[in-house]
Image 1 (cartoon, rainbow, N blue to C red):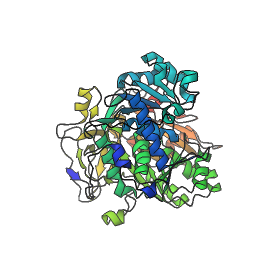
Image 2 (cartoon, rainbow, N blue to C red; image 1 turned 90 degrees about the vertical axis):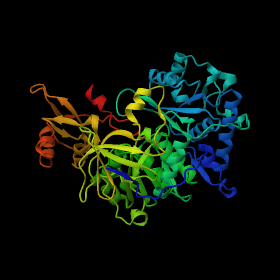
Image 3 (spheres, rainbow, N blue to C red; image 1 turned 180 degrees about the horizontal axis):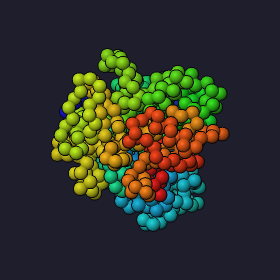
Length: 535
């Protein structure tokens, strides 16, 4: 079956990201707060941000960087990230955002693959940035260290060198539909990380698609703890908040106490999180020590959020909990529970086990991965599971220099094959079952790890959990194995975990091995690093 978004189509202007975000800014909006650094108390207004973006673009142009060039950014969330990122796009160049946790060799690999000619970083990451720059042959003047001594003293330009020059932004011309704005890296549905070519139109489209569903206004204060280098933080936080003239409270990393303090001190109204943060908010006693009453909406993404966990957060904090779904290849959001389903669709909020409805201007298919046949629409309940396919203006241009991987992911009709198993209800609301490649096959039955992980998190003695398939030494068959993090001072053993799961699932889904560990390895965006658990 093919089904379209239930939301009305939105207009997607044929303009650059910079023109879309800032081209219509009014004089009375220039003084509004765009970015807040809670550690220093420094505030950047919209007027100041635009001036900094122009200055970065002008400096890059003076160095010969423009259309066709790539600049890397290796940085955690800091206010200057916005200036540099949008300055690169303003100059007509392409930004490749690099995971702040990467090693020197991983940084070098992305610089080399993307063809980056410059790298922007900060002092705490200088050692790995310098090693990577040296490995790929970047000269010292092309490694910008924003908070360092400056080019005269260190050979590396700093923020004062770049922004302080005050050079005017260049006049550039390109086709927003085909010009690559950003190159984040993603493993996609299979294999090694690949450069995801996202055009200006892709990024503009996704912010436009989100606008009527997010409910974000100029009065909102949004906490920005999800990394801007990840497409979720880049689009849903940075670009969407700037488009809506909201204020961003910028955090370089997640720390529960600082997160709670910032919400309280800055009267944060909206929070975008990954499920690990929801676990802390639902279970940690320290949450009760803070006044979080300003929060009215929280959205989870990047990994599946269990309905019971999400509702526990909503009850505890008295807010509206939502969930979205997407991937880098979709710029990234393709599905969302809107801030007001009743007003927008005349429907009640779906359960948080769903990812909501397709965003405007998009079309979906659910396809049986075994037969290739489209799954029939249900008249009640949920459809049979199948692979989710998505078509819309937010679908990437393709993988950089990888025609085969692109062809394997986007078909001739323009549908992107997500690699995720999904079901749909009669209203078109989508429920993600699991990654196709992460499904555990036990005695011929499919076992979704996400389902067991969500169940394990409901146990009072379990702080966090992950499930993978492992080969049983005796039978030679794949079995579900749980990795469990105990709550502080909790006593729980393997037998109790196995019995707890067995009492709540079908026999083929039972956990058959348990290992207790100190922490579940996760990416910066909150996804469980199952490959690390397999090592």
